[in-house]
Image (cartoon, rainbow, N blue to C red; front, side, top):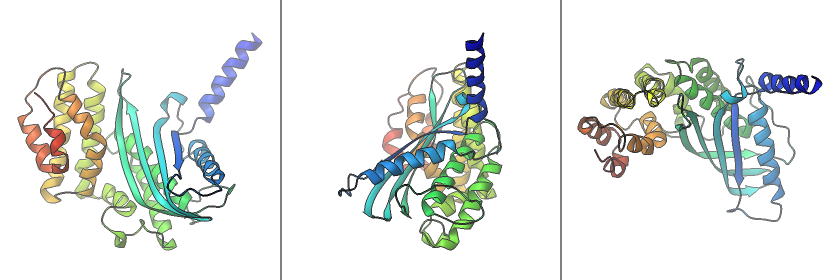
Amino acid sequence: MRKLFSLLFALFLGYAQAQELNCTVKVNAEKVGGTNMQVYKTLEKSLSDFVNKTSWTTQTYKVNERINCTMFITILEGNAPQFSGTIQVSSSRPGYNSTYSSPIFNYNDKDFSFDYTEFQNLTYNATAFESNLVSVVAFYSYMIIAMDADTFALKGGDPYYALAQEAVNVAQSAGYKGWSQSDGTQNRYFLSNDLFSETYSPFREAMYIYHFQGIDQMAKDQQLAKEKIIEAVKKLAEIHKVRPNAFLTRVFFDAKADEIVSIFSGGPQIPITELVDILNRISPLNSAKWTQIKF
């Protein structure tokens, strides 16, 4: 009985203490080299603890509800305590009643510079800028959570996009690249701003239709699921009419292009001529992939 109680208590703690993210963090410094490689291992461990042990929202997540994601940091220049490189962020979620995991977000941020001293304490303050390292990682943590929420409920990510936008607003004053509209047209500023813009609301509708009405129906009715995924792609075409080559359209297909090819190259056949025409029009950079759709 005591052993049973201990097991149940441990399971309860696992449920109560589970944060939102199940994130694999990797730091690659092969391009930098040097004698003190331990600092990168310490950074990797500290970031992993920071991302996975921080409660990013007020919601309670069960252990099996945590969002699977990765943050892959490549250090290109390093002269402690200053470093610069890239951060590749990706996330996925399982389809309902399935072992299949659908990619949600896949983005490579090339404007990533930060100061870091080994064993530095990493904490996030939502109201004051303290570290670009922490602010960037916090921003993408909120983006992962927000995009995931959008796949379960129409605009379900609103409160988390608001937190991501708050991170942008606070970080702008620090002068690091990637937080301002003057830093280019495809960065953290525009990623956050566009997701709140009414112009790009079809993107968020597409995320919901594609995943909740499409991917989640695959185990039950593949034909219906495919039809819903086509409907989602048509939503993105609405954006293309007013904003050709939109940043968010690229973000969508960076995550979904390979999956779309796979979905429409097997299973029940449905008409795809219109789909392929739309894909070639709104995502011409993936035209070689669209030729792989066989039906």
